[in-house]
Amino acid sequence: MAAKGKMSGMSALITGGGGGIGSASAELFLKDGAAVTLMGRRAEALQATRSRLLQAVPDGQVELVAGDATNEGDLGIAVEKAASFTGRIDVLLPTVGGVCAFGSILAIDMAAFRAEFELNLFSGVLALRHAAPYMTGGGAAVFISSAAGLNSFRHLSGYASAKAALEHFVRTAADELSAKGIRVNGVRAGMTRTEMTAEMFEDSRMMSTFKGLVPLERLGEPTDIATAIRYLAGPESGWITGEFISVDGGQHLRHNPDFSALASE
Image: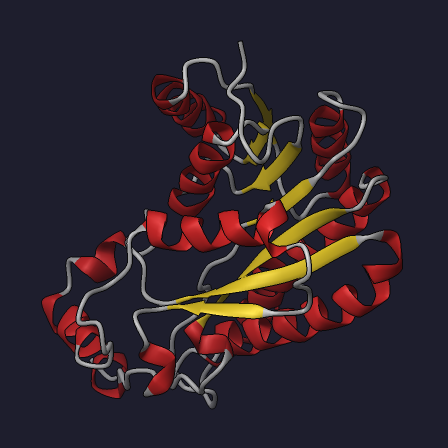
């Protein structure tokens, strides 16, 4: 018998579902009764994530779609799979993103700069375009931004610009889709331990620099971000749209680190 909770009867689609934040969010959704569809490029990683989730929530409903979140055909398959649980989609969580280039604006490769927008902005835009028609009873979309999208971040101009663009897209989408009962919000994540940041966490100089800028004096774990996502996805936040919650230990109160010395090595 499926778990009962505040998300019971809901269907959620998570792109980048094999990643740390996506899988941590999926676990919270499942524990509160939602059915979850995970989309990701690597079928093996998705299968491993599904196994971990079902160990944590044995009666959870988890479907998998191996595909590229920047490909409209693959997204179409994913939204249909997610909608097959209940005939609709209630929650959309696009987590695909990442850094494609690190370096000075004057030396950055323009192909890499464009790729930042493809990965961090366009993947989320496409996910919402495809999922929104299935949100027939209203729903919640939660996007992932970064502390880099709020304050300037030297040598990450492409990534920071793409995240800033994503935040404005979220505000515009929230306004436009409100008539359909679709809420659109986001989480502005600080430095969080994931597969993507694993090498950074092993760099003691980089981590000490980050920690010195975090008032709560620790870096993030996927569950820190997932807890805020769960709030924005669920009924408790039913009168919130067009907002971003900074989940960064308070780093937004200060500034982003300067890695100029590392960039020059």
